[in-house]
Amino acid sequence: MIPKLSHSCWGRLLDRTSEFQTKHAALNFLLQKLRTSQEPYLQKCQSLHEFFVKYERLLQTEIQQLTR
View (cartoon, rainbow, N blue to C red):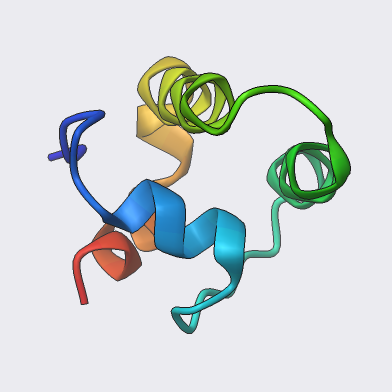
């Protein structure tokens, strides 16, 4: 189950404060883009959350890492 947008995991993922590994190139690209973007922080979290919702079937391993 994907954590809600208000969950702190999205911020930790953007700030690299949690251990997170993925082999999905698209997710790695999105993370790199968001981390260097000048967008508002909440907007970055929302974009990341939307990506996980859209590709939930493919990201089961990554979803499990979010709340550790």
